Length: 268
Image 1 (cartoon, rainbow, N blue to C red):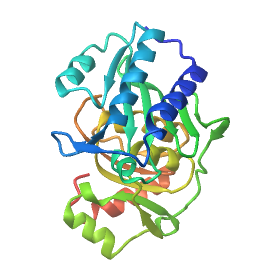
Image 2 (image 1 turned 90 degrees about the vertical axis):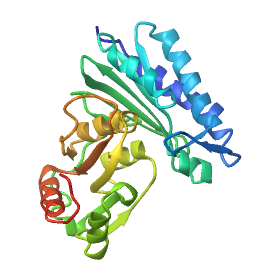
Image 3 (image 1 turned 135 degrees about the vertical axis):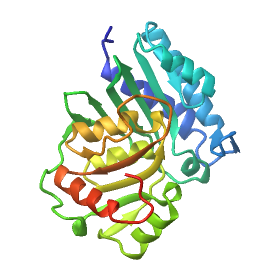
Protein backbone atom coordinates (compact mmCIF):
# COMPACT_ATOMS: atom_id res chain seq x y z
CA UNK A 1 0.00 0.00 0.00
CA UNK A 2 1.36 3.42 -0.97
CA UNK A 3 0.18 6.54 0.82
CA UNK A 4 -1.25 9.38 -1.20
CA UNK A 5 0.88 12.27 -0.01
CA UNK A 6 -0.23 15.86 0.43
CA UNK A 7 3.02 17.83 0.26
CA UNK A 8 1.44 21.17 1.10
CA UNK A 9 -0.22 19.70 4.20
CA UNK A 10 3.08 18.19 5.37
CA UNK A 11 4.98 21.42 4.81
CA UNK A 12 2.37 23.44 6.69
CA UNK A 13 2.34 20.90 9.50
CA UNK A 14 6.11 21.15 10.01
CA UNK A 15 5.99 24.95 9.79
CA UNK A 16 3.22 25.13 12.40
CA UNK A 17 4.90 22.74 14.81
CA UNK A 18 8.23 24.52 14.40
CA UNK A 19 6.60 27.85 15.22
CA UNK A 20 4.57 26.61 18.17
CA UNK A 21 6.93 24.08 19.75
CA UNK A 22 10.50 24.93 18.67
CA UNK A 23 10.85 28.65 17.96
CA UNK A 24 8.62 29.59 20.90
CA UNK A 25 11.09 27.87 23.26
CA UNK A 26 14.31 28.77 21.47
CA UNK A 27 16.97 30.47 23.65
CA UNK A 28 14.94 29.60 26.75
CA UNK A 29 15.91 25.95 26.77
CA UNK A 30 16.53 23.53 29.59
CA UNK A 31 17.86 20.14 28.55
CA UNK A 32 18.61 16.78 30.13
CA UNK A 33 20.70 13.81 29.10
CA UNK A 34 19.15 10.63 27.74
CA UNK A 35 20.53 7.19 28.54
CA UNK A 36 22.80 7.31 25.48
CA UNK A 37 24.32 10.62 26.58
CA UNK A 38 22.55 12.79 24.00
CA UNK A 39 20.42 15.77 24.96
CA UNK A 40 16.64 16.01 24.94
CA UNK A 41 14.49 19.06 25.60
CA UNK A 42 10.79 19.72 26.10
CA UNK A 43 10.78 20.98 22.52
CA UNK A 44 11.90 17.56 21.17
CA UNK A 45 9.08 15.82 23.00
CA UNK A 46 6.39 18.40 22.19
CA UNK A 47 7.36 18.47 18.49
CA UNK A 48 7.21 14.69 18.24
CA UNK A 49 3.85 14.47 20.01
CA UNK A 50 2.26 17.15 17.83
CA UNK A 51 3.51 15.74 14.52
CA UNK A 52 2.67 12.16 15.48
CA UNK A 53 -0.90 13.10 16.39
CA UNK A 54 -1.43 15.04 13.15
CA UNK A 55 -0.02 12.26 10.97
CA UNK A 56 -2.14 9.63 12.73
CA UNK A 57 -5.28 11.66 12.15
CA UNK A 58 -4.53 12.29 8.47
CA UNK A 59 -3.06 8.85 7.62
CA UNK A 60 -4.33 6.36 10.25
CA UNK A 61 -3.15 3.43 8.12
CA UNK A 62 0.52 4.38 8.57
CA UNK A 63 2.84 3.51 11.43
CA UNK A 64 5.18 5.87 13.24
CA UNK A 65 8.79 5.78 14.47
CA UNK A 66 10.24 8.81 16.24
CA UNK A 67 13.65 9.45 17.74
CA UNK A 68 12.17 10.11 21.19
CA UNK A 69 10.40 6.74 21.39
CA UNK A 70 12.02 3.99 23.45
CA UNK A 71 14.28 1.52 21.67
CA UNK A 72 11.67 -1.21 22.18
CA UNK A 73 8.95 0.97 20.65
CA UNK A 74 11.19 1.78 17.71
CA UNK A 75 11.97 -1.88 17.09
CA UNK A 76 8.28 -2.77 17.25
CA UNK A 77 7.38 -0.02 14.77
CA UNK A 78 10.14 -1.01 12.34
CA UNK A 79 9.08 -4.66 12.47
CA UNK A 80 5.69 -3.78 10.98
CA UNK A 81 6.94 -2.92 7.50
CA UNK A 82 3.87 -4.36 5.80
CA UNK A 83 2.39 -0.88 6.17
CA UNK A 84 3.85 2.59 5.50
CA UNK A 85 6.00 3.97 8.30
CA UNK A 86 6.72 7.61 9.12
CA UNK A 87 10.25 8.28 10.38
CA UNK A 88 10.63 11.46 12.42
CA UNK A 89 13.42 13.39 14.05
CA UNK A 90 11.37 16.09 15.80
CA UNK A 91 14.41 18.26 16.52
CA UNK A 92 17.62 17.39 14.71
CA UNK A 93 20.48 19.39 16.18
CA UNK A 94 19.31 19.45 19.80
CA UNK A 95 22.77 20.43 21.06
CA UNK A 96 22.75 23.48 18.78
CA UNK A 97 19.19 24.28 19.82
CA UNK A 98 19.92 23.98 23.55
CA UNK A 99 22.99 26.20 23.18
CA UNK A 100 21.06 28.90 21.32
CA UNK A 101 22.76 28.22 17.98
CA UNK A 102 20.29 28.78 15.09
CA UNK A 103 21.01 25.62 13.12
CA UNK A 104 18.51 22.81 13.70
CA UNK A 105 15.67 21.15 11.83
CA UNK A 106 12.69 18.83 11.72
CA UNK A 107 13.21 15.75 9.54
CA UNK A 108 10.34 13.59 8.29
CA UNK A 109 10.60 10.59 5.96
CA UNK A 110 8.28 7.87 4.73
CA UNK A 111 9.38 4.23 4.52
CA UNK A 112 7.30 2.08 2.17
CA UNK A 113 7.97 -1.43 0.89
CA UNK A 114 11.47 -1.43 2.32
CA UNK A 115 12.69 1.86 0.84
CA UNK A 116 12.59 5.53 1.68
CA UNK A 117 9.99 6.98 -0.69
CA UNK A 118 9.73 10.55 0.62
CA UNK A 119 11.70 12.99 2.74
CA UNK A 120 11.12 16.53 4.00
CA UNK A 121 13.44 18.65 6.14
CA UNK A 122 12.43 22.03 7.55
CA UNK A 123 14.91 24.65 8.72
CA UNK A 124 12.70 26.75 11.06
CA UNK A 125 15.17 29.62 11.46
CA UNK A 126 15.65 30.31 7.75
CA UNK A 127 12.20 29.08 6.74
CA UNK A 128 13.70 26.73 4.16
CA UNK A 129 11.84 23.51 3.36
CA UNK A 130 13.71 20.78 1.47
CA UNK A 131 11.87 17.75 0.12
CA UNK A 132 12.18 14.87 -2.33
CA UNK A 133 10.22 11.90 -3.62
CA UNK A 134 12.07 8.83 -4.86
CA UNK A 135 12.58 9.07 -8.61
CA UNK A 136 10.97 12.51 -8.85
CA UNK A 137 13.74 14.92 -7.89
CA UNK A 138 14.53 17.20 -4.97
CA UNK A 139 13.29 20.68 -4.17
CA UNK A 140 14.01 23.67 -1.96
CA UNK A 141 10.61 25.31 -1.59
CA UNK A 142 9.63 25.90 -5.24
CA UNK A 143 13.10 25.57 -6.78
CA UNK A 144 14.43 22.30 -8.20
CA UNK A 145 17.73 21.16 -6.67
CA UNK A 146 20.17 19.86 -9.28
CA UNK A 147 23.87 19.64 -8.53
CA UNK A 148 26.42 20.38 -11.24
CA UNK A 149 27.91 16.98 -12.20
CA UNK A 150 31.24 18.58 -13.03
CA UNK A 151 31.79 20.87 -10.07
CA UNK A 152 33.94 20.79 -8.14
CA UNK A 153 36.25 18.71 -10.30
CA UNK A 154 38.73 18.03 -7.50
CA UNK A 155 38.81 17.80 -3.72
CA UNK A 156 41.19 20.76 -3.58
CA UNK A 157 38.33 23.00 -4.66
CA UNK A 158 35.84 21.49 -2.22
CA UNK A 159 34.45 22.46 1.16
CA UNK A 160 34.00 19.47 3.48
CA UNK A 161 31.60 18.97 6.36
CA UNK A 162 33.17 16.47 8.76
CA UNK A 163 31.97 15.33 12.17
CA UNK A 164 35.31 14.53 13.82
CA UNK A 165 33.69 13.52 17.13
CA UNK A 166 32.52 10.16 15.76
CA UNK A 167 35.59 9.26 13.68
CA UNK A 168 38.58 7.14 14.60
CA UNK A 169 41.17 9.51 16.16
CA UNK A 170 43.82 8.40 13.65
CA UNK A 171 41.57 9.29 10.75
CA UNK A 172 40.66 12.64 12.28
CA UNK A 173 44.32 13.49 12.86
CA UNK A 174 45.23 12.60 9.28
CA UNK A 175 42.47 14.80 7.85
CA UNK A 176 43.36 17.69 10.14
CA UNK A 177 47.11 17.57 9.57
CA UNK A 178 46.97 17.14 5.79
CA UNK A 179 43.53 18.26 4.56
CA UNK A 180 42.86 17.37 0.91
CA UNK A 181 40.08 19.97 0.66
CA UNK A 182 39.96 23.76 0.59
CA UNK A 183 38.18 24.17 3.92
CA UNK A 184 36.19 22.24 6.53
CA UNK A 185 33.09 22.80 8.67
CA UNK A 186 31.02 20.93 11.25
CA UNK A 187 27.41 22.08 11.41
CA UNK A 188 25.58 19.98 13.99
CA UNK A 189 22.30 18.99 12.32
CA UNK A 190 22.69 15.85 10.21
CA UNK A 191 19.44 16.32 8.30
CA UNK A 192 20.35 19.89 7.34
CA UNK A 193 23.88 18.84 6.41
CA UNK A 194 22.50 16.45 3.80
CA UNK A 195 20.18 19.18 2.51
CA UNK A 196 22.79 21.91 2.38
CA UNK A 197 24.97 19.57 0.34
CA UNK A 198 22.02 18.97 -1.99
CA UNK A 199 21.79 22.76 -2.38
CA UNK A 200 25.47 22.97 -3.35
CA UNK A 201 26.62 24.73 -0.17
CA UNK A 202 29.49 22.26 0.34
CA UNK A 203 30.78 19.30 -1.64
CA UNK A 204 32.36 16.62 0.61
CA UNK A 205 30.80 14.85 3.60
CA UNK A 206 31.99 12.47 6.30
CA UNK A 207 30.11 11.48 9.44
CA UNK A 208 30.90 8.51 11.67
CA UNK A 209 27.49 7.46 13.02
CA UNK A 210 23.95 8.48 12.05
CA UNK A 211 20.62 7.08 13.18
CA UNK A 212 17.80 6.16 10.83
CA UNK A 213 15.83 9.31 11.69
CA UNK A 214 18.97 11.40 11.05
CA UNK A 215 19.65 10.34 7.49
CA UNK A 216 16.38 8.97 6.06
CA UNK A 217 15.03 12.22 4.60
CA UNK A 218 18.24 14.13 3.93
CA UNK A 219 20.05 11.31 2.19
CA UNK A 220 17.15 10.88 -0.23
CA UNK A 221 17.13 14.62 -0.90
CA UNK A 222 20.85 14.62 -1.73
CA UNK A 223 20.55 11.60 -4.02
CA UNK A 224 17.58 13.07 -5.86
CA UNK A 225 19.57 16.29 -6.35
CA UNK A 226 22.31 14.30 -8.09
CA UNK A 227 24.71 13.81 -5.19
CA UNK A 228 26.74 10.62 -4.79
CA UNK A 229 26.62 8.51 -1.63
CA UNK A 230 28.60 5.48 -0.46
CA UNK A 231 25.96 2.76 -0.07
CA UNK A 232 27.89 0.55 2.37
CA UNK A 233 25.72 -0.22 5.39
CA UNK A 234 22.52 1.14 3.87
CA UNK A 235 21.38 -2.07 2.17
CA UNK A 236 18.88 -2.85 4.94
CA UNK A 237 16.76 -0.30 6.75
CA UNK A 238 17.48 -0.67 10.45
CA UNK A 239 18.09 1.12 13.73
CA UNK A 240 21.86 0.64 13.79
CA UNK A 241 24.00 3.71 13.17
CA UNK A 242 25.49 4.28 9.73
CA UNK A 243 28.67 5.96 8.54
CA UNK A 244 28.00 8.64 5.94
CA UNK A 245 30.39 9.34 3.08
CA UNK A 246 29.15 11.52 0.21
CA UNK A 247 30.15 14.03 -2.42
CA UNK A 248 28.37 16.36 -4.78
CA UNK A 249 29.10 14.21 -7.85
CA UNK A 250 30.24 10.61 -8.56
CA UNK A 251 33.74 11.53 -9.77
CA UNK A 252 34.36 13.57 -6.62
CA UNK A 253 33.08 10.73 -4.44
CA UNK A 254 35.59 8.40 -6.10
CA UNK A 255 38.42 10.83 -5.26
CA UNK A 256 37.15 11.24 -1.69
CA UNK A 257 36.88 7.49 -1.08
CA UNK A 258 40.30 6.81 -2.61
CA UNK A 259 41.85 9.37 -0.32
CA UNK A 260 40.01 8.20 2.81
CA UNK A 261 40.94 4.56 2.16
CA UNK A 262 44.60 5.55 2.05
CA UNK A 263 44.49 6.95 5.61
CA UNK A 264 44.91 5.17 8.96
CA UNK A 265 41.81 4.52 11.05
CA UNK A 266 39.33 4.27 8.21
CA UNK A 267 36.74 1.46 8.06
CA UNK A 268 35.33 1.90 4.54
